[in-house]
Image (cartoon, rainbow, N blue to C red; front, side, top):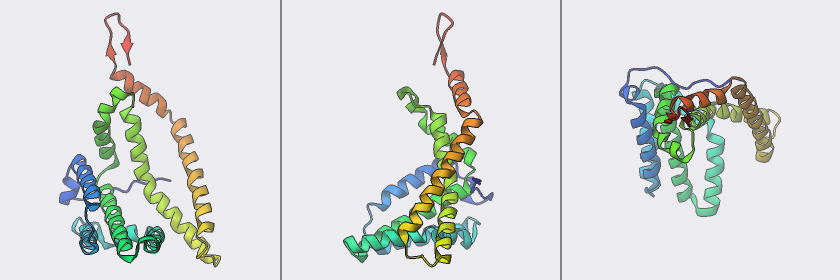
Length: 219
């Protein structure tokens, strides 16, 4: 039900460690909000799109990311144009397209196992605050896996509404999409619980616990 997005390859980006790619993605997401020129933001989106064939992923995968989010991009651009003008709408849309393409590029060129291991290492300091890095890394990785599935659900719902002649009824589209997404989330939660993830996480925590002088294990 939830397929991995990783596409094997030998490009420079494929060979770059997952940690560096996540750091570059975070820097890109932060830096874009300091750019106000629609032309520069448009150039960033174009470069992100060109990175797909350079990495051996082809034009189709890059275009598929934009096409799948077209409805939401149009909705955001339209509301932004109405509230702040077309210049602001172009800026916001270009930022979102760049981030969508960049995030998808990372997932296409990085095995999800490597992403999860990297996230767990990054989140390890949170252990002192009572957070389990493995559980949080798993949740974030699962979120990444959900992205293409939710995009497919949105596309299927949109096509169903068009077939009924209600392509302009945005609220009517949003309701079944949210219901299907919540239903799928419940199914995944049941599957995770059935596979004993809690037990795995507890065992992982106990393996890293420090023994006490009296023989007890302090988790």
